[in-house]
Image (cartoon, rainbow, N blue to C red; front, side, top):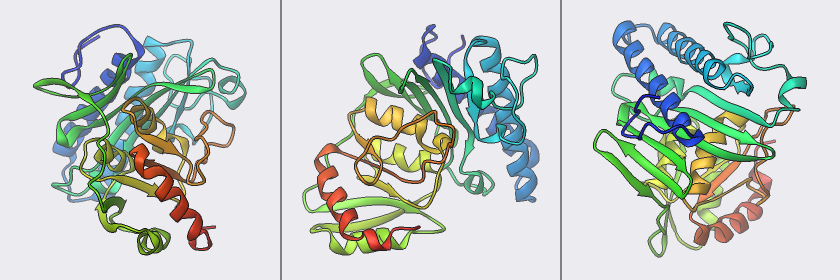
Length: 290
């Protein structure tokens, strides 16, 4: 195993997730240089495809017995253990598997296609027997990878690694990450009912938003506008390892590796903010998207 973003080359699932996400990120940076930004659709499609094909092939080679669920593997469904896999493991196989890799080859295609934007990511998560056990979120344009580990979480860059632990928000202020293009109305309503000052901070991809919480750049991410398991699996794995609260917006556990991969809402924050945010969300539940 090679090194990726400062993560030591050791043969465990945490390091494998980091290596895969980091390598896919470097592929995407290369696509940006090769294709350029003149045609955003070509850039998005090329990035999605190359990252997906790399991840599917690498997982088939390194973990041939594991199932795979990728955002870009939905068009057709085959056994991911095929010689040149491009599609997801068949549902009937995946749902019986003990180990399932849940990946988003390019989270934030809009931001990826805009020159100078750094808020896009690659997600690689491992689900085992009912829970997330490893995950990595590569932020290629930022030169960082957030990774689970046996003793918590770390953030890695070219200089090395540091422990990653979610930080408590300042008293009387909550900075909440929201979509930069479609800020949900219910989060604006939430900001009005909370008994603290709220700053809405626009950020691109879901992975970049949750990473911003863990890196102390914002205090919370609240989303109810529709997502899938690959949008949150890796960031939630890292968030939990970093001591963050991560749940559905009704406070229940986010459950992965289901037949229907839709997982439309998520809350990630420091545990001290969870009760306040969950109560506020209940207060504005009439404004939640259908």
